[in-house]
Amino acid sequence: AARAGGGAGGQPEALSLEEILRLYNQPINEEQAWAVCYQCCGSLRARARRGETPVARLGATAHLRVWRDGAVTLEQGEPQQPPPPAAGEDGPHR
Image (cartoon, rainbow, N blue to C red; front, side):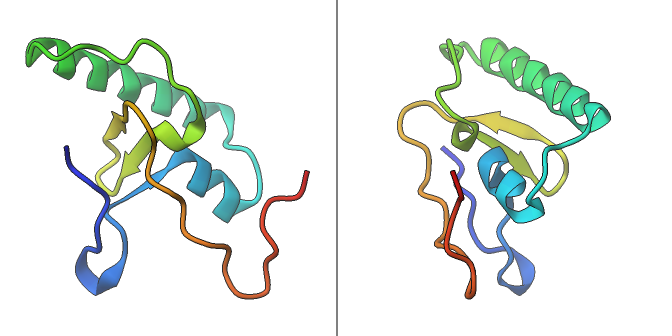
């Protein structure tokens, strides 16, 4: 399966929705949420065309990866571990 690696300039090719929400420190807006839903449907259709088993249910926002080109992929199993908080941040506040 494709993994989010460093692209040009060392920037990741994809971020999980969890990482995006943490980096922006706010929820996505309605238009962005619909765009993510639309891309998820496209990802599920592509999996079905390839004869792959569809993801039954996302366990966490970390399972949904948003790629630079706007494509969305759904990870099965354990998602990639998010990077540690940036310097000066002490992680998610609950």
